[in-house]
Image (cartoon, rainbow, N blue to C red; front, side):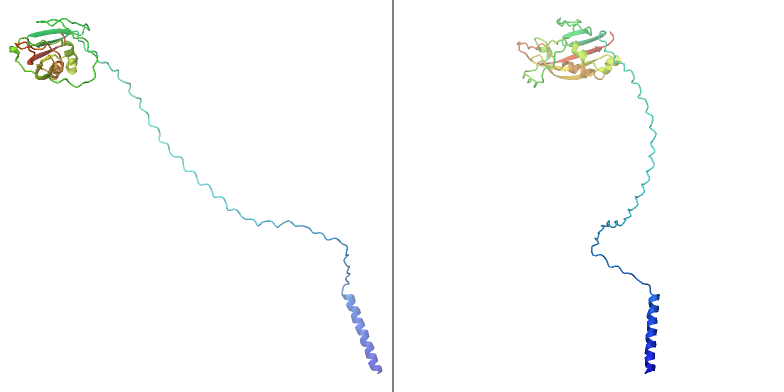
Amino acid sequence: MRVDKHLLELSLAVSALAHAGAGLVLPQRSFTAPSASAPVEFVALPPPPAPRVDEPPEPEPEPEPPPAKRAAPKPIAPAPAPKPTSAEPPAELSGTTLTAEGPGTSFAAPTGDGSERREPIQSGTAPASAPPPKPSAPATAPAPKPATSTVPLPDLARRPEPPALAGTLARHYPEDARRRGVGGQAVVRARVDSDGKVRTASVVSESEPGFGAACQRTLIGSKWSPPMDREGRPVGTWVRYTCRFRVGL
């Protein structure tokens, strides 16, 4: 019994020493009970920064095209100086003599002096000048041709007398012949109606191209004295008319 008691005491002593050693080895912790009245603070934290998004790099600017080579301006040739236009001198008619011959009547008229003459046409040569042209009247329908008989010139009691045609003939002088100083003549066959008007004329001959047409234009539309037959009635008849174009006389 004594032995058992002794073992029990020894076990208790060893156990006490073991606990004492453990207390020396383990650190001692002090615990402080939190105070019930300590205030609690809430701190608002800033939001986390947005994730950084890398912007795409800017594209490199395209290289500028090389400047186009400007063509050297062509030298502008100076405009040629206008040639002095020598105005065509007016036709000198003071030395031009225009003559015309009709049935039983002939005349020669120097033109270009600008004077107006109203003398009657006589046989032989007599100066005459046509009056200035009247303003052209509005175009009207041509008068109907009088229906009369045609009597040959030798059978007439009174032959038709031509008007003063020198001025009209001068206006119709062919320009080319005038510039070249060419004269000549033309023969035209014309019909004088009973009212004395020439409505039809044809060229018989001409010494220079253009003279026949000029003489024809001179006669058509001219007013003659009406031809009369032996009974005193106005009739129509055919005449030959010679236009002479003379320059430098």
